[in-house]
Image (cartoon, rainbow over all chains, first blue to last red; front, side, top):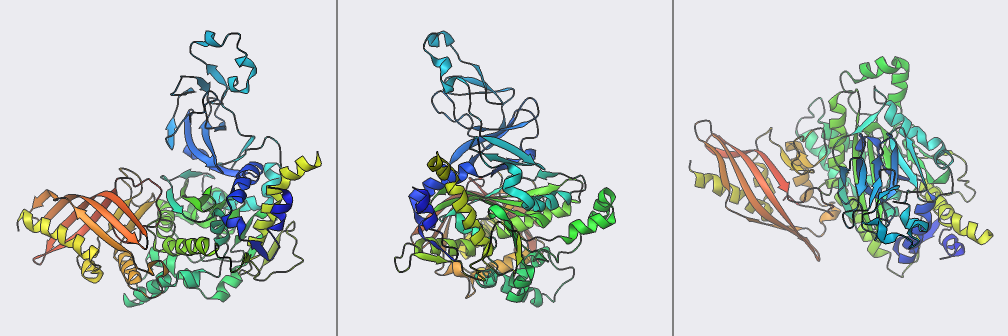
Length: 438
Length: 157
């Protein structure tokens, strides 16, 4: 696939349906986009002690996040350099001081370099030492841990971490600043939800503020009816606080605002959001004020960003300490892993609220997730229709919009979706253009 | 009250779910009871870690009314379900305090359009006798593969 082919699929106000349905496009995404971009791997609290590891994927590449003996986090390709056997297949574990392949017992330090090969004399004079296989487990191109969140770039060379994310890191900052002790800890394993649709549909939906009132009407509208029927008890049930704002009118979502940053990042909820009106948790403001002073604590809690998309494939909800990872498994298959984190030093009721939100909204058993998945899967099937080949992204479109500039706009704009596709073209073609220029 | 009465209750509850008699099913529950489906294998904390379900009566009622509602797009067309249950173990039989607990192995089948999925699970029912009627004080459904990746599970295993 050539750079011209990629560029022809994105026309500002519309994208060609092949970006969602074509296997060739998916393979190009894995080979180019997911190599060139900074992609989320995990959280450092998932591997707190030396030898701790988790297994995950960057695009279609199996990787291991591991805490090395010097305390640093490394991200390695999950492949024995000998025959290709995956070094680890459990989702989490501790390997001690070294990895040992279960097939032929080649062993490696937790930074990847080779430790030993049994019956090594069999390789004397064979030239093994000159091969890359002899070096050990290959590491990814670059790793950066930002306030506990581990990101990696597969390519050895490319855009730097700070240049890639820029001011979008302010959402992660706000999420971590909410912890009186200034750090987060993972709370339990993630929900794992399979979607028979393209990963980009899920990412786009995070800043689609014109669907909740429609797709989720059955749930939010019914909740309000039941609450009234129960005599509107106070304090409101936590479930009610979470659900009711989904039924807010279009004007509310317009007023929330959307901000976009360069390189495909952006968020809903600039001015306020559906997360602004939760009841205060006793003792929390006091704990945060003790750490930061009242004025700063208030400033931190007044920021109620709704959904922050970190291009290419994660969502962060700062007010609820949640992260969702949209892992592409094929052009029409995506695994969504939804994590909740504990604010270290804050009352337990906050993580309880996050866990409740997670199971109510993001679980395979969630009455909200059901309706979203229904829409994605209908779209994935509908896009096979030859009736039209283009998907429309035109709400509040301006032909002169410049995605290299940060912008704040009406909360119902589809600008963030267009911003993602602008970045999609950029990181799909950045290494193609480099090759063409050589 | 005999052990058979307890076992009959478990069978009748599964049948209500299979036949979609949700209003009748909701009336089995005591006001403070929760329906818990853990996410992690052998999970002990339903509050501070994510579960697949941990629903009070407000949420269960919302779920049921939504299943019956007109604008529930993921239930157009509707799903069907089928519980095949093994004879329950009555692990607690305490007529004096009117407290009972059962442990039941089940296979749960759910279908919609051309799709059908099978889940294996163990259900723990906590029952109380109130005014001569058995009521649900809690139900825990442990899926054999609770930590696997699932598509939609639309009804109640």
